[in-house]
Image: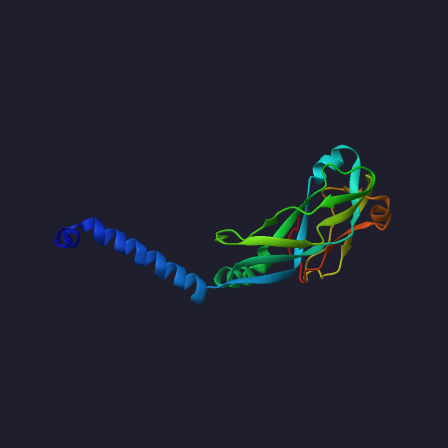
Length: 197
């Protein structure tokens, strides 16, 4: 009977699988242990602003532009996560906001592309909600002025500037738009000797 077991290939396959699992568990526990880390100042990206614009509204302000994320993951995953921390952001869906102050839940983090999130668990977002202030969308149109800060090359002469587009529309909250006094197109090149568009 023992000779038959030794000759069976299934015994070797099962032993190999068992040893591989034991080795994998050993490596996970000793070489790549699970750790907890707080990733600070993760960008908040607003989504759904087009819905507000179609309703004649705009985001006038948000209480927090960054959040802190507490994650739990194997050390190797956390190391990679910290290496690409600039690519991490959270979405803030403002599409359901109404005029006034709104409390909006912070969305799920968007991890870097081509990044393995195996074993990664999000433990906490701080803050978990953000106050979004929504106001009526205000629009104002301005003529574009031209200003030359460069020099025309010797033997050349500056003609009458043609600006396209001649006007621009600025949209936002009343406070933001009221801060715009004029719109200026500035040309700063030196020794100008050809047309610039």
